[in-house]
Figure (cartoon, rainbow, N blue to C red):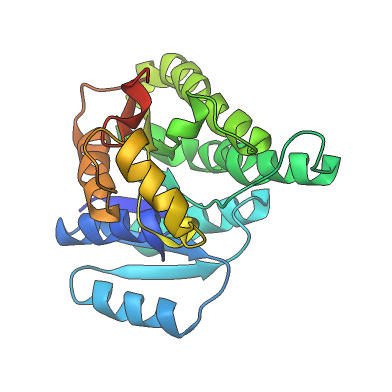
Amino acid sequence: MDVAIITGGTRGIGGAIATALARRKVRLVLNGRKEDDEVRALLQDLGQLTDVRFHAGDASEASTSAELVDLAVSAFGRVDFVVPAAGGPNPGRVTEISFDQWMDAFRVHVHAVFHLFRAAHPALAVRGGAMLMIGSVAGKRGCPATVAYQTVKGALPQMARALARDHAHEGIRVNVIEPGIIRTRFHAAMTPEAERNNLDNRIPLRRFGTPEQVASAAIELLTNTFITGETLAIDGGMSMRMV
């Protein structure tokens, strides 16, 4: 059976992808910052579906990626899928954020992907595998007051194309999924006014997405062995509209 490593795999989109894979009997190595009651409840639920391991740690640290791969190989003997889903908001204009905040956005959203691919590469190359990056439609269209977040998310599609091209001969595929406004903790601070504006003026389908809808598309990109170097938006049409 296949094995997946998912950072940020205990909540939100990462958790939904973990659940969707578990239903397909994919064995899981999940990462989050800490093991709390909510994480333990998820692990118990997933354990009814598949074999699952958890490793706490900072996904932006190279050592965490190495430890996750070591755990997957020692527990299950292989790695087939890697999903660097850890992340968070990085608000502010360039005149408002510090250089440390700017660099932290890269550390969490770009460097973490670099570390995980590097650590998992030898295992992925054994029989071919897939990495799925979690981008954002904020990386393809201008948004107010999120310069660092937009920049790092905009970097992921090109990073995916570069990795996909370099490692296709090993059977490794790399793709990106770009969620729009998905109802998770990430958007918990959305005001009623912003919610109304998003539904009335920004999203043609006039509804928000769910983590499960993102996970459904993620499964296709992970398991379809003839897709690589591609970026797929899941945003209700938000990123394609001009007005």
